[in-house]
Image 1 (cartoon, rainbow, N blue to C red):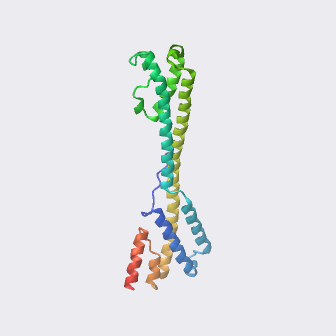
Image 2: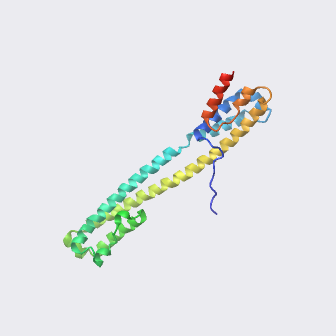
Image 3: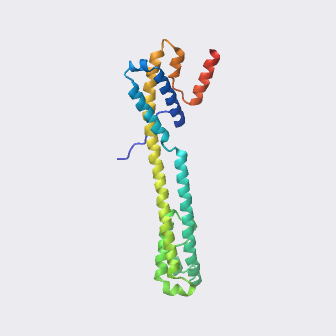
Length: 232
């Protein structure tokens, strides 16, 4: 059964979530005596802080995308080296055979520049295989075991680069899911902490009540705070 996609329970950036958590933890420490009456003690607050610290250390999507882009660049360079090795053989094959002949077509290099990665890899291996089968006929135009080996080496390097790139894509998907899962757990704990804080100060201190209000963004919180200072 396919695993269901994990969705964020909060609609503001992860950086804002972390900052809001840090600020609310600070207020909860200030009000720890009252929080303890709700069963929210120092140990739970410490666990919440540790969760936030682990969340902060997770790689963000910019890092993961950067790694993915680097691996894609390396794969593209490996693909060009493979195409170059194939062309080196096919230039010689074209001298020996008409490029409309069956012997030429057997190499299967038509529209090589438009081939997707998997097709290009198969093409390289086919060129090496067919060239080796006809090496006695192609020797006079300079096709040798050395040319063929260059194609095979380029195939191997391209396949390795392709696998690394695919791994980076998978790693990003997994990391994004892990970050969303941990972010949701932190947000759930933040909601619990803020609900307690608001209940403590609902009738006695509107400013401290406001300290436990969750905003959609950190900027919203700053604007609200400035408005409170003006009103005060």
